[in-house]
Image (tube, rainbow, N blue to C red; front, side, top):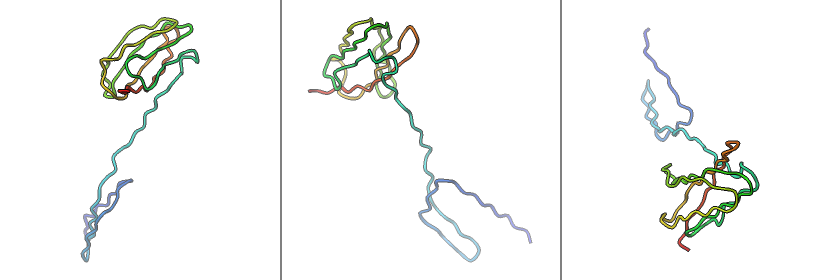
Length: 125
């Protein structure tokens, strides 16, 4: 007796319907997609870095006691919107041209190359 039988399975497959006859069973389902998680780290540079207010309307302040740092602002699609250098003390970013929404502010210490990413929200209020 010769048989060409194939058995396959997928972890995460959810069966939604089955068909059966005397010698075969067919199960219909769908596969769950691969999920990945990403992390956003905050305040890794030092405790001397402050980003405020959050949410903001037009101006975001960065207060830093001692380091020179790079500033990069991205939208949630990863498009670079702003790139500049920050000095010790207060740096103000005029973001009045941006639409309301969530942005990622990436700050990198130019001395030791540590970086932090802040989620900031622009509101109309």
